Structure formats: structure tokens, C-alpha cells
Image 1 (cartoon, rainbow, N blue to C red):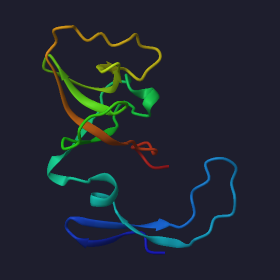
Image 2 (image 1 turned 120 degrees about the vertical axis):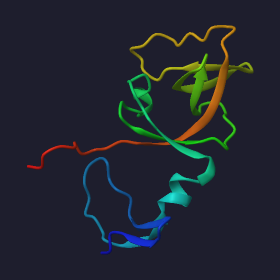
Image 3 (image 1 turned 90 degrees about the vertical axis):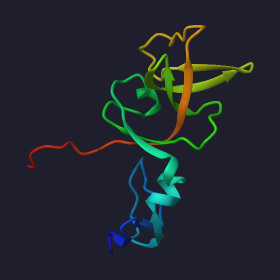
Image 4 (image 1 turned 60 degrees about the vertical axis):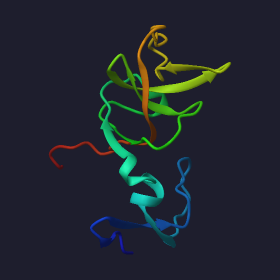
Length: 146
């Protein structure tokens, strides 16, 4: 089974296995390859010139599956909508929050039940900079191999 195929400097294709991965009780796995996916354009980066990576610092979004040290893929070309995770500037301070729109009024909220509600000052200068489309986090610890 071929694990990786590089077409050019900008395209990296990785085999997509036909069967879904069981996250509950295990079942016999089949080694059938469904095809290849281009992580750059098809799944992670839809609009390359408008896409940026940010490293997350802190745990205010942990209940959304976004953890300290994760990389966020952020697309500036997307129009933010209710429920999106957004990169936002509040009075010049950059952060990541969930955008909720209730009765036509936007709200920015933490995704950490241990934190109090995020107070946005009424007269704050707020700019939604982009929409987070994906969070990447390592499952394997870096460091000495054993």
C-alpha cells in the first residue's frame, strides 16, 4: 500500500481507505483504497491565498476540540455564520471564539464550561478576521523515542 504520493511542490496526495475507522468496538479492517485526496485543496485549504495557520494558546476552546498548541486553519474568504469558530480581534487583541447569532445579535463565546461567559464590552472594536475550518492537533507526543 503506497502511503504518500507527491505530484508537485504544492500537491501531496494521501491514500483514502475505503472503510470508515471504527472508534468504538473493533471490527476486522479491510485494506481497500477508495482513492486519493489532496489535503491542500480538497479538504484542508479551499482558498489558498485567503488561508492562514494560527497556533492556539490556552484552553478556552477545549470543549470544541481545540486545544492548547493546536494549529487552526483559518479562511478569510468565508462569511462568518452562526455556530462558526472564528478568529476575532476585540480592541486589537486576537483570539478564537464561537460565533453565535441570537435574535440577530452576534455573541462571541468560549467553548470551555469551566470559564465564565466571555464579556464583550458594548463599545468594543470587534473585527471577525476569519473562519476556522479545521483544527490540527498531534496525537503523538514529541520527544525521545522509546
